[in-house]
Length: 458
Ligand SMILES: Cc1cc2nc3c(=O)[nH]c(=O)nc-3n(C[C@H](O)[C@H](O)[C@H](O)COP(=O)(O)OP(=O)(O)OC[C@H]3O[C@@H](n4cnc5c(N)ncnc54)[C@H](O)[C@@H]3O)c2cc1C
Image (cartoon, rainbow, N blue to C red; front, side):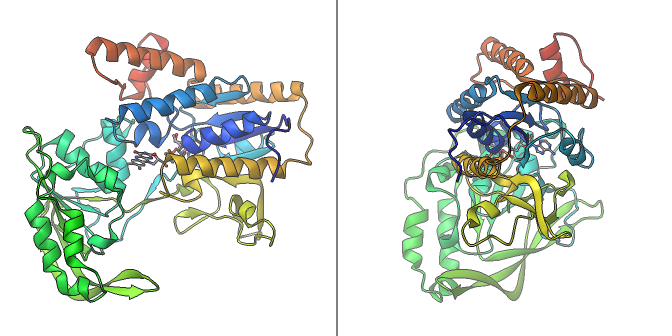
């Protein structure tokens, strides 16, 4: 790997200014590179701003502080409200023509995954990320109506499920029951115990105990200790449920959704699931359908089963992921994992890399995205080790040309300066309303706050 401390004044473009894009930028800046970030959203931060649960104020503000410091570096240009892709403000071809020495895609995983079930397009079917963006005030999701009913099934058993349940039960408050539907059993839950604390008060302890007992023969068939699972998952003294949050939470294990049931108006009115057994394999378990079906009387469903990358960005793509080099040479498998691969010409796409959730969709927390971005940045620096950096005047010219192009294509120029103005306006609002945090939830409102006069967005 390259020594990241050696001065290298290369010009590197990054698509996406979430944690991965920003931490990659930091690593590159520390090595002397010039970095240009193109970000779809006005604000930087990605899911740290628009995914992490809104009431985790301390964590969010801690990350914002780090991001501000990165963006304050004189060798970085930030362009918000500037999307890259086939239908974006800029295309990949535009970026390739701008004279970057390397291009890194750090655009996260913006596509949603679906199971392809009959009825999946019905009103009442939602995807976790869209809802997460909605309650975190990201336009345009913040402006959309979500058809949340009284009884909501959440498919999946990871940390995102916890956040959705937390939102429905504690912030939205209008649901009577949240039912977690999981393919496998209680032993295969994927959420962190720390996160579970946020929703523990809502869990119907008796119902959970009964559900695990109901599955006893199926769990014991693969050697699982039912009583230990009950002891781990339930508590005789759950925290008190807030008086103004009436909803409860239950679990339906060993159940795979097979069909969304709809009424004559095309609204969902139930979820058909197939009962599963567990099959032990190589020290792990998988679910196998039994051919027995049940109908859950729910009026909404949220899929919290992970995301896929956005193929509209234009990089080679298959099965939810951008393609990376499948031919690592024996000495540097780590490098190959970050290089984008063109399967048509069967070669690496020159100077093009992926990091963070764009490399491994929905994998890990911010710390993991940071680590991944830093490794990716080192791979880039290593690859550029023998390429002379452009001279300072050329870099300045290219940065200026990029600024002009962004101004022309994106309709408005959102740089670090505009973000500073926006944050000051939001802090002022928070102060006035005595809130721990305040966010403008439309692009119009953000641009109006930045420019100090009414701005309409087409
Ligand atoms: C619901 C939820 C809750 C989470 N809670 C936590 C938590 O509590 N703690 C924690 O540590 N981690 C949490 N995470 C995980 C964490 O958010 C991710 O690990 C991290 O944000 C991934 O970073 P990324 O930069 O790869 O992607 P993202 O954060 O998704 O950033 C992608 C960036 O790319 C931009 N972009 C997208 N498409 C384009 C395009 N076409 N052109 C230009 N720019 C584009 C976006 O605007 C965005 O800024 C949570 C994730 C989710 C989904």
